Image (cartoon, rainbow, N blue to C red):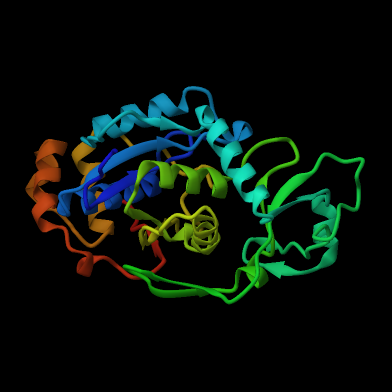
Amino acid sequence: MTTHPAYRGRFAPTPSGPLHFGSIVAAAGSYADALAHGGEWHVRIDDVDPPRVVPGADDAILRCLEALGFEWQGDVVRQGRRTDAYGTALEQLRQVARIYPCTCSRGEILAAGLPGVEGPRYPGTCRTGVTRPDRAPAWRLAVGGPPVVFHDDLQGEIVQDVARATGDFVLRRADGVFSYHLACVVDDIAGGFTHVVRGADLIDSTPRQLILMSALGASQPSYLHLPVATDEAGQKLSKQTLARPVDLSQPAAVLMQALAFLGHPPPDEFVRATPARIWQWIRTTWSRDRLPRARHLRLPPPS
């Protein structure tokens, strides 16, 4: 039987392009928290959605992490190679009647006019049977019951009525691609992760993932959602908003900026230090009490 340490964390980027400053903030926060707790830190490439994958981006991400001094345990997990595990989980949920096929189009869901946290909310049209048997179905998880409540180690108590926030959500699309939520939960369970430290842009996803964990008979990890870096217009730094890749010619400066954003500015002289020296410093300096509690923080302009 495999045993895990008391703290086991991970960083799980999507290979849709190179890492930008917002990505490094999430990676640095999760790595620093693992170091401070004497735990393990793993890397997973979330490439379950082929249309979002940019060829070569996974290798570029790993080279970037190495250049910045990140050290992970074990092999890098790639979701694109784990579809059998997701299919097994989907079948497990089907056996206990937690999922059902759905043939609704995006336009039909939009026409229902139900608002949700990530756009139109699914109205439950196919719960009693598909409306268009000529279409390939997606598979949805039926949700209901009381709101999901969990404690975030930075943001405090989070409450979400998933039925009203998203409605029954997709676990496998009509084109056969498994959803982020199912793949993430199956891999977090398989990896034995005890702590999930990631950006606050994913906090609305957590209740759905907790429902899935419970449905699959797993215990929930501890969550900590870090502030998300935004540009001058208040938009989250992302590949979609054309955030620039990090400058690896000055790795110490990149790390110092990310850690300062997280309330842990290293001494100025560390700009000439190696990344290993900065991580050695953060191991004994890191404190969750110093983390900004805002969900979004504007990135300071270059000095």
